[in-house]
Image (cartoon, rainbow, N blue to C red; front, side, top):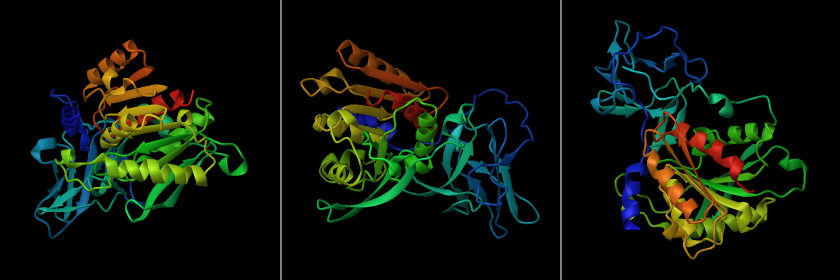
Length: 371
């Protein structure tokens, strides 16, 4: 177990997938448009058809402004000041498709970009930018029936307070008496229970899948996974028992009592990205009679030995980006299949430890649940 936790240390932190080929880059096209995540009326940041990002910040009293995106270990993208006090710059190369966190460094201080919306990640509210993906249709807002994402506060005796969760109910839930399966979906390290709806667009992915007739509707529950705060690099200090008590002993009974659920193991799934995958792995191994479906999204793997002599899962789903360690999930799924388990691996092409990997993973996983 310790060895597996050490392996997960590499993937437990959120990283920005800003990469490009080490070759001569083509000329940058001047077809920049505002990012779809910008504040209303704001022109910057902008993205172009090649995936470059351009930033413009007004800071007339500043000496230097950098953007954390763009140059990786070389300190990000340096912006250049003009006579009017605007700092402007373009990333050296194209960014990975999808969502990215970023922030500004102004004279050594960390600030958010006033031009764009903020998203909770890296243990703070970060700026966000969206690089349009070639396959973005599956998570776009469309003219289809929509479900609802509502905040709930549930009592937690184990932590001595009320805790928050967000619950997605599918289109039509309010009008009928039908009961639904439930997916408990966990965020990554440094994020919170808003991540899967805001950055991940889980509700839109579900709405579109349901509208296309690709899945039977189910409920998604998203809650905060950090019951004992762990600083970056200290993942070995995380203990699963407090969160396991919150999830299994408090949240699940609350959801089953409050929403029209199918309250059985075979109609309950758990999945998580990165550290949420580590939590999923630990809890499903510890409590095999609670969940029937397991999914680790860039969050490690199971071996046949992990599941031996336990209630057999109906599905094990393992995924990663092609820029992570895709052979790990492929090989693990192969070993599980050989041992008689229903295991599926998925690799997101061209992405790293980032939300397009996880959006795609949810899209691929959802039709396999509750069969």
